[in-house]
Image (cartoon, rainbow, N blue to C red):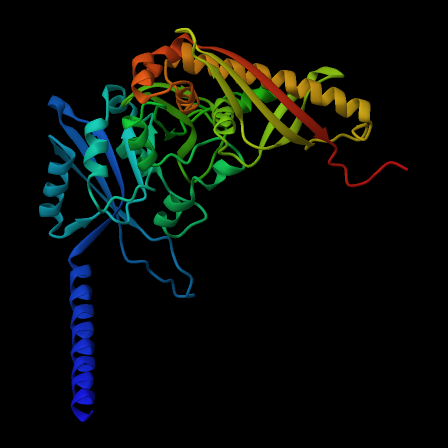
Length: 407
């Protein structure tokens, strides 16, 4: 019994010894690592890439004890491939690059139009890259986008990169597009990839008055009427066919895409006022269940029926509003249905005829029409999608949001 106690005591000492020295080793290793927060990839000369790496430095404290914004360091290297660029940067900074904290990967629009599958495969093959890292396609050079990114309400830019897609759930103006989803869409035969459309504010639309309120929903990155310290903008979707950029979606089209894909909790639209053709009414819409999709693939021109339902609450009010009147609410519901059906239909035909890309993932519904995957492959859905016709049905129930009832 005493020998057993002695052996147990020795085992505990050895375990404590290993833990103590392993923690020291880990601490030493962390000092030899450089943590990358973002990667920007631009097209260089002679078929090379210009790869920018953004690092954070130690935060500083002011005399009053408040924490200042943590500065960042950005270095750029020109190389023939992404993996070569990483190796060159390792040598330059004297530390090993660690990509486990990389939150966002930015590709320039110019590079994305040529195809980015090689870079996507390289990144996804790196065990340090998290599948949750977001992908941004920048309308300006990726390096410039990173230089202009300056979060106003966060001290840590890593925190901003982590949360900047949260608004997609309640605005629908940008997707939460990750490298994991992008890679899956490239190798999948039922959908096409999308990415966040980014840029810097360069084109400010003119204020055209209330009669053109819809113009606020037709903007995308580099066109918004926003002015602030953060020069980078993220509004819209970059649509792909395989690994090549084929088009862009504005704010309203992005909201439509996310609504059809069941990726938005609520969103705001402005519908024409049934009683005044020169004004609009703001409506907050909440999806009622998932989008229903039925596809007929008996011919090479797929016939796609889309049904959606929403509950709407009136957001804008005026002193003479009669939004407690059931007849007015019914008229608003019908107007909203007609408006949304037009918007959804225009968007779907744009993805089909202009982009020729099933970024909606309708292929997963079409797959149910075939007995085997070979039959589905023979139908060649990704190419047949451009021949599709659509029938859109929207059922909206508008409710008043007035807190004070009439007496």
